[in-house]
Length: 191
Image 1 (spheres, rainbow, N blue to C red):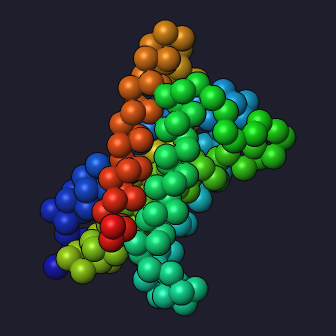
Image 2 (image 1 turned 90 degrees about the vertical axis):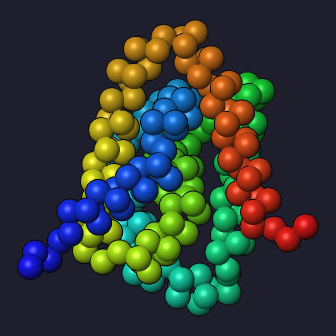
Image 3 (image 1 turned 30 degrees about the vertical axis):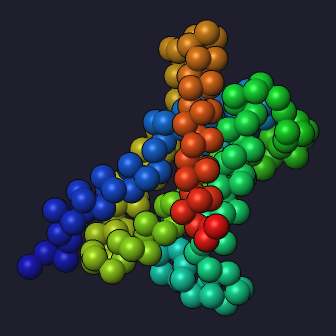
């Protein structure tokens, strides 16, 4: 018997692809690239890969160790996403542009919480109970490669959409991102 199960790999890959939603994040990535000057696709992809693998193995224990529950973790991520969405919709800048932004944008907020955020992390914890670890790891690697390809080609995508297309996408996806942030916040609070 093979150590890998192709059906499980496909399932895990598709689930993570839907949760990560790198295609839906393209307008945000373009905005971050414009503000920072560039995106370090290799750095962001490696951080995404490491975060997901570490969280797969020790995520629940790590959160427990520092006294956090998944709901608190998800709410914190939802607030960061909320502010990014507000910037996109209103055309304002809440996050300062600086040299530090160009150095850190590939990690925060791009790799975390936008790509490997609370939704991805909680999904990994639930996948762990249903699928073999090696199949989840293959799904993580496949998704990371796809993330890398999108990040590496963000300038080409920016040219493809054009200035007007990007502005329309930015506003539309800003509203969607805002709704995601609110849903994430509501589903993790007990109001």
